[in-house]
Length: 213
Image (cartoon, rainbow, N blue to C red; front, top):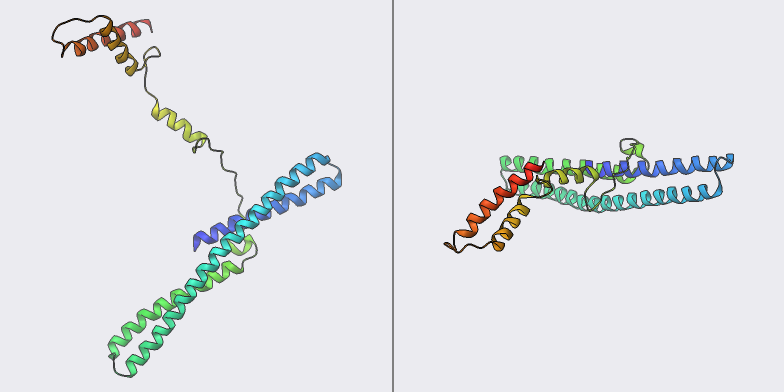
């Protein structure tokens, strides 16, 4: 419920902002403060903003209307349950204690549902942002590139960063190490030579790289 009210509040605020901007734009045109090209361009932008807000309001109210219908059906069910409980008690099916407990439980559900129906009707009958909490300024969201904002991109670059020596990553150094091994094969215990050469070559390259920094 709170979510729907907030959505309506924001949508109404967008619409009211667009209406205000269009009104101000018309005043500027009458005063001759802007040329025709500026007027047409900005009018198109604000009109699009207005249409978008109206569409959003219609969609939200459509969802509220569907929820109201469902809640109203629940309300009718609880009313019928209360009536049935009273009959079951009168015919002797339920004891006074059982009837009292069931009646209290069902009535509690009924009252909560009635409150929800009233709230949904209030939202559905709303006309302006004043009816749903008042006007709020909606800030434009930062444009996203590849699904992340600029701030998120910086964070991702930082997290994904791997230290390198002289422009070479550790992976590059190991690759170069095996290249050195291939260029200088030694036929001694084949299973150990690649590892030994990789270790020796790696430390050799590291010493050379860091020695030049």
